[in-house]
Length: 113
Image (cartoon, rainbow, N blue to C red; front, side):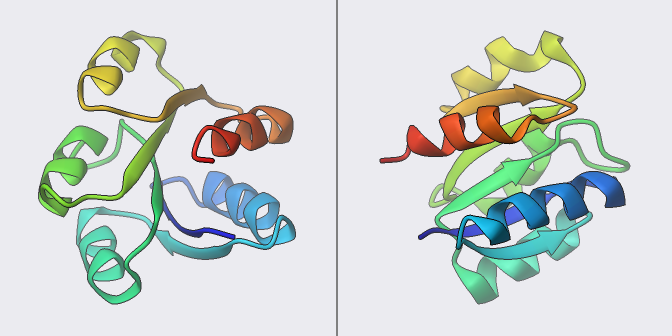
């Protein structure tokens, strides 16, 4: 199973994703902002980041930049469909709209192999 970092400023979304991913047997680390995401990235070395786009201070795209060239695979999870094209320009594995449905999340995870 994968080591997954969830970065979202919404507690409810973080909790939901944690529950779904944990039930699937994944190891899950949670972060609510860029600083926590960088710290978790350094300590946990996740295989995948589930990343919100609209967050206070830094966007998900800026967080991805902070993670550097060796950033893990990313699946964006957001309430906004207008960022999808840009997400795929930065090589996102997938782009999920909130509210995230468990079957759709599993489908996105299956893209990783």
